[in-house]
Length: 262
Image (cartoon, rainbow, N blue to C red):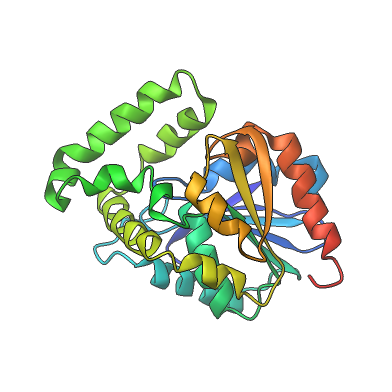
């Protein structure tokens, strides 16, 4: 794996074979670090892997003007359109990255498939963003972010995923976290993402962590759509970390089933 800094962002890249590109988008407070084990996975070695730390997250720059979720999607669309990436290009978005990935897949014609992992669909899915909403922006920056980080640190003793989350959270811009939390709450409360996801003109799949991931309401609503849903058992909000064997097998199954399309 190599790393580079370009477009004012930090990028992780694993140059594999010529089967196509897996383009990863991380979640709220996260960084591309959370996908490193997938990028190094031997079963996915024929793919080119790329994972940015979004502006304000991970090792990327903190900016005074914070991009909205829609602007982040446009930023990634511009990058994909201006950069050579082996085709087909499959977006893999986790949590907030699932929301950004939905917006991105709707606006960029160069994308051939979309894997949504635990992306917000309803207000009940806002388990992290809702913690920021109880503060004003100034309160969150001065003390709320430290309190949130401390609570995640406590959970890290019993859960490896929360341990990984805490590492990325420690270098995230609190202002970006707060703004994107408010946006996630707003768009999730409108429950408009399900319709947008269902209308995407590319092969799409939703991965749900069971039993401690996606909310019951979102699962119920997903049943009434044509969206392909895969439940990753023995996992929560990070099913690709908590049950990687099952996740990778189902990911390969999705890409194999749609190989003539993507």
